[in-house]
Image 1 (cartoon, rainbow, N blue to C red):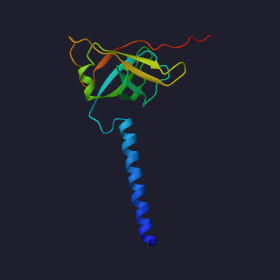
Image 2 (tube, rainbow, N blue to C red):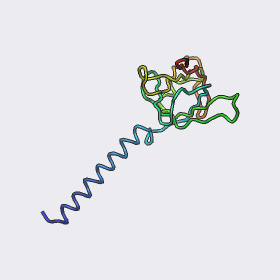
Image 3 (cartoon, rainbow, N blue to C red):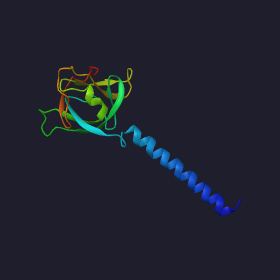
Image 4 (cartoon, helix red, strand yellow):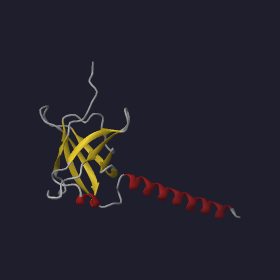
Length: 139
């Protein structure tokens, strides 16, 4: 094999691996899915961070896009989430968001409960109810 053929083969293989990596990372952040934004407000986000998993019915169906500090101390922290369009069938206006932990000291994630069948579906940008985040008392 000539040097130029090996160089060309190396470049093609590198581009394929790079492309695969972009799509793999993009699928984790739902970059290539049709999504909508939903919001919840919490008094305390208990260590939740941008990019955290959002679960609906225990299934990874979205990510935390950003966490916004309140403009005043008497207001709540706003969590903005991107969810797959397919969740609109079960996430309703009466759904509740809660911050949970993987195990005892694991990563934080947002769990969104199913809504009732009689409640209307959420619209993009809606704010749903939330449960207070559970934290260990400080002594």
